[in-house]
Image (cartoon, rainbow, N blue to C red; front, side, top):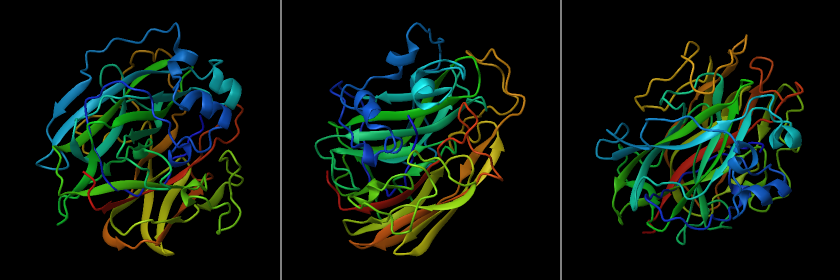
Length: 417
């Protein structure tokens, strides 16, 4: 699966504990990571049947045991009156870079694990989610080092009261995405006079769309650790925070537009750069409602230098990135140590590290705002890349891998309890 993480505009919702049910049919045009997936693969892997990575390349492999609890109750970090849980999803097997699996044969992607997991355990039954973040961990609970990294992770809710806030085409909503920069998405701003969050209903389900990368020839096993801070209960008087996504790889966020008004793309249809230094524009997204923006952020692949977000052609946020060798930063504010260049070996990591440890994005900036949005306002992003300064990810044959430019804009609307 080629990744494609978009620009977010946040609007709010939350929930926990879950009865298994049929996996939701997700509108791929509004989910980062699915927009550029070839339609035949999308149909077989990401529709209601939800075939998992385990079916295609995990058979016959034994996951390492772990003593780390699946659910950990922790003190709040972002909000003093909130509850906090860390839930570990997995384990997920990362194939070695030489393994002849379907990703390598069909798409030229080595060492990549693509995951689609419906009916995830939720942090609550009915609550307002205040913040989300994610980390990639080994069996012993330590953050992965530079040989295993978080390409991207996306959480999607589905339920009878949910409509995607981008194009209103499906009863699903993408509520979280993060790559190796390990961004924290905040649906609640404690200093704001307005109480708001992402509303989780008891009947809502939670689905993971993820992609994790192995740099070794030997397999590795990892867990995706998602941190949730939430306010238990219904809170009918709170505003609803939502996320809308914009992406440079897809015109889907324009909800029907066929062309990009900013001109020809610097990327191929699969998102591969045509030049080493460029700035790529998304198609503008038009807000269907009056709202208030809480904040904006984004996601870039290695090689990216900054992401700019515009409202009605006016720059409202400049988000630069920071690089480091190894896996980069851990869960923001999560209180976890994270393994760096000198980390101990973990299960599935018997092979030596690469001679030259790759440089990856460590962190990415964002902007906190409290500005009005009128129905009809437009937003677009510009993703800046310099592959000469920061080499991007490579395919097995040495050619450039695809890149992404995704932005997030948090805004709240009237409640829908």
